[in-house]
Image (cartoon, helix red, strand yellow):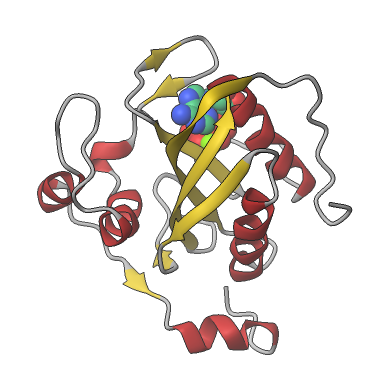
Length: 188
Ligand code: ADP
Ligand code: MG
């Protein structure tokens, strides 16, 4: 797809499709549009389909407070890309969205994190699955529980239970209409 220039070559495919949950976040460059585009771009990755997406959540930043609110969401993919190739693909999408290196927890145009990849546990230099930040991030758990409350991490903890136990953090669902109107009212 010309709209989604991806520099993926020579990737490994799994013999079967794997369900993978992805966290999306943005607080620069019109975040609502960024996430809408990212959902489409994920669906256009090779051998990959988006099966489900959550609503969009407005979320005050963790870390440095001198930056705009984030918009966060979670998507369920079905993919045959191997984990490291999926990570490369997500980094390519971040890059295509105009993301550049920033300070830790600093503002970014697009952040795409792999939350889970089937039931696998991975701990390598470049990839940790399940994503280590899951259990204390309400802005991940709330959209995730919305689309898959019954799903459990490889260690057996259910998303709905993790959400119930997560630290409090102000979060609100962005009404669909304001997402639809976002071209006229770029408040996010
Ligand atoms: P963060 O998402 O924590 O704000 P970055 O998006 O800058 O940080 O990611 C930094 C690095 O984290 C990436 O280059 C990637 O190699 C690594 N990483 C490790 N595990 C994961 C994962 N599950 N999903 C995405 N990136 C990961
Ligand atoms: Mg990331």
